[in-house]
Image 1: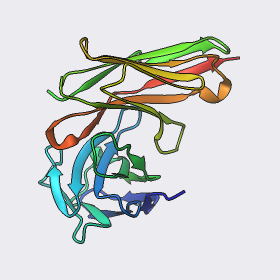
Image 2 (image 1 turned 90 degrees about the vertical axis):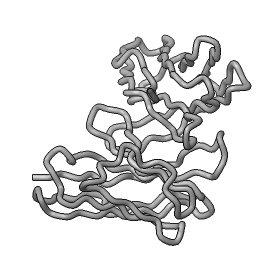
Image 3 (image 1 turned 60 degrees about the vertical axis):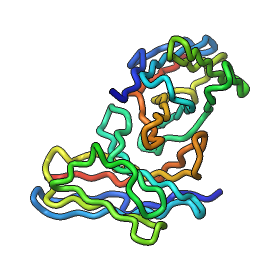
Length: 114
Length: 112
């Protein structure tokens, strides 16, 4: 079964440093999502791509977060500078285009900011 | 606003009993409602989903019901087993940008 690939699996960084996460969606999935999950809470949507275009980034803290999906396939989420409150699990998901298409999640990147 | 409310936050049931988790959504145009199960340290995995043109859907011990008028939907797990212990999230696809918004989760514990 095809899976969403994410790396790294774990990342520890000091505050004020830059950090980047990578995601490779399931082949053929045009829609890609980045979610942030704080321990004990539900996933919070940060940014959603349709192919290479951003369709929603209303909850992305744009002063420090950026996301790109240049060729409409894999994607990178960057934080610069990292803050203590950014410690969380960052989940990437992908889906086919369509209103009833389920999300398939990757294993996530657990970020710890010290 | 775009939100999904989920109750209860924690649920403990005796093995073999049923568990029910309830969610409400705010966008009457929402048309897709998935449920995810997340075990400790693992990714959320889809367990069942329902479209707005259907009132109920079953898959073995799991069922989901949808009340479009009241804008709420529920997950029902019957004959619970120890492996059902996990955190369950409901979600709704909102019409704006077709984004999927998640509830805050329910931690289900099955007592032996």
